[in-house]
Length: 200
Image (cartoon, rainbow, N blue to C red):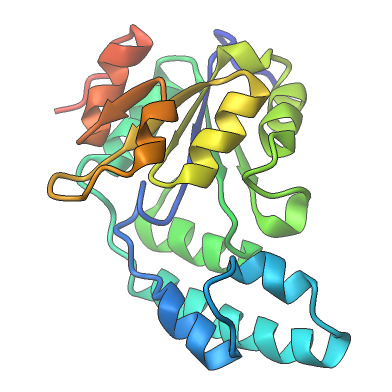
């Protein structure tokens, strides 16, 4: 398919569309990791260790998905983006299974979803580049919205416009200045993108 107006809006899931509930420190502790990124550490493990670590991660992800809560206006913003003729995409480092659980629970629909089983992961720019290719548009017509450095690194490297979602009260990290825009609420997005999506 193609985006009707060429605009692609790529949302992160955990901490952006949903409230952050994944306890990464607990996941690392149970697996036996230090402070390194969980997914990259698991990929580097021998097969037996990797199988055990993946089972732990899947359990935590599925529990988080079952207990997930949407950020304020998240569903309205996603629906409004699509109604305005842009493509709404979900790009996450989560599993396909836990992502499907979140979408079912909250009745969310996207034109395309990209999970870690679908190819390269953030912070690589490849997911954004491939998403845009699939939707028949250019990366400079894409917006990447997320709450973490990987979202901003990924989007910037692909040539997309990046938006950091920074909830009120959350400390602003040094890398936040790398984002083109910073918002404190998802319903600030329409004005940035230059279209009205009817969010109330």
